[in-house]
Structures are given as structure tokens and as C-alpha cells.
Amino acid sequence: MSSVKKALLETKDLSIGYTGQSIPLFEKQNLALYAGELVCFMGPNGIGKSTLIRTLAGLQKSIEGGIYIHTDNAELRQQIAVVLTDKITTPGMTVEELITFGRYPYLNWNVSLHENDIRIIDEAIDQVNIRNIISKKLYQLSDGQLQMVMIARALAQTTPIILLDEPTAHLDLNNRVEIMRMLRNLARKTNKAILIATHELDLALQTADYIWLAGNQKNIITGIPEDLVLNGSFDDIFRFKGFDLKTGKVKHEINRARTIQLNGNDSEYLWTRNALERNGFQIVQHNGDTTIKIEQNNNACVWIIGDNRYTSLQGLLKYLCG
Image (cartoon, rainbow, N blue to C red; front, side):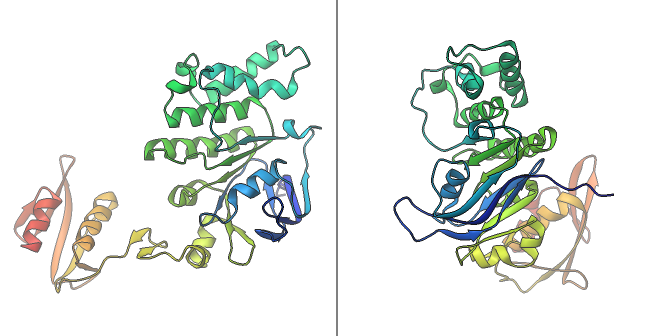
């Protein structure tokens, strides 16, 4: 018998928009966040991703409709933790002090940490692997480290739901990958529902359980990443120019008469094909004008054309293009 997933947050005919304006950004949306799943909310700039995050978090009023939270906690701040893009106003605070703020919803009037609070803070620090920086001041951190600290503070809040607005903005590739993988693993291991508003299309497609995609009709399209790629939803929304989402490749112009039959496997094949197509060659499966065979020799790549052998793609391209 299959188990029924538990919705931790649901919306009913939810319409949201800017404060003081009656025209909604999204209208009559029925959405759900489930325990143990990572959801990425995507769409063009200015479409209203941050507004939806703030509305679900109770920081901004909806125009109409309802938001229903199905958890055992009574107070909203014990149900939802939020990581926004707002700038830190106390850069002289230490990392550990900021993470401690995650426990404030559970403290009484004298703001005294108990043994359980300290244990939870320690667990949050270890979950994001930042023990080596807990004594540093916030102004001493890189952007990537600061994002990790903000996520640790959200974890210390021990809420079943975490909402994050652009947690990877302005970070380098390594930090972006690390944060997205970490959030996916946290959803799995802690059974939390995690929603991220993000522009990281490539990472979202590889890590998210579900995608919420801002549509063109004040709607939000939902589904698993692969379905939304194959049914054309992403193409309809983003109108990709010169990029084929189904293959994950930039479309190159074929400007050379010679066709190439490429024989090889794995990453060597993919990067060789990329180099050839970038230089205007068409790759065919059979009966190419030129056949290139890729072989591995002592953990090094060798490209073979007839009796000629090349130990680098640069050398191969010099021969083909010369």
C-alpha cells in the first residue's frame, strides 16, 4: 500500500499582489508543499516570486484566498522559517549569535537558552558544516558563507517549513551547487518542506522534486522538472533564444560542409561534440565525411582520424579547421 504524502502548507484560491494594489500578480492559485520535498519556484524577473514567498510566510497580506498550515505548532514563527534577501544590519554580530536568533520563538521573557536550545543550535551548525566559522563576525564572511549561516539560523528555528528567496543570488558556481544540494538533502533527511524562489534553472532541474513555474496568465504551473521540460512549459515561459532546454545545449550554427561521425562514450564524447558543434561542424550517426574515434590511453584521451592521433581537442580542431 502506498503512503499518502502529508501537505504541510496549502493555498486555496490564493491571489497575491503588491500592498495597496488590487490587481493580482497571481490569481486564485491552489498550491501545496509536502514534507520531505524540495520545491523550486521559477519565473522571469519581476513576475512576483518574492511577493509569493513573503505572502506564504505571513509577512505580506494576500488579496484574497487562504493559506492553510497543517503542523502541530501553534504559532506561525514556529511553523515557517524564512530566509530573505534583506541585508544584514548588524555586521558586527558573530555567526553563532545570529544562528541563536533561530531559537527566539521558543524562549520566554528572560531570553535564556536551555540545554535543548544549545543542542539544536549545534545541530544546525553541523548540518550546514560551518563549525569552523562560528566565531567570525558577519562582515568577515563571504557571500556564500553568509547564506550558509542564514540557512543554519532557519534550521535552528526547527520549523517544518522553510521558505528561501534567491538563496544562491550573486554566488559562484561552487557555492550555488553546494547550497542547492544541501537544501535537497535537508528536505530528505529532516522531512521538511522547503520552497526556494530561484533563477538557477540548470540546478533546479537537477535537484528539485517539484517546480512551481510562474505562467503568463497570472497562474503557477506545477509539476516535476522533467515533465515541464518535455511538455514545453519552460519554453513557453522563458522564450529561450538560441538555447535548447531539452538537450541543455546552446544552438550552434552549422557553417562547415564536412560532416563528422563521432564514436566514443561518456564525458569525452559530450565535450568533443560540444567543441565540434561550437566550431560549426554537424555531427551525424552514420556515413559522415570524417570519422573520429575517441579512445582512452593511460587515463588520457586520444582522438583518432585514420592514421592521425591527437592528444588534445585543440590539436584536433586545428587539423579539422585548418
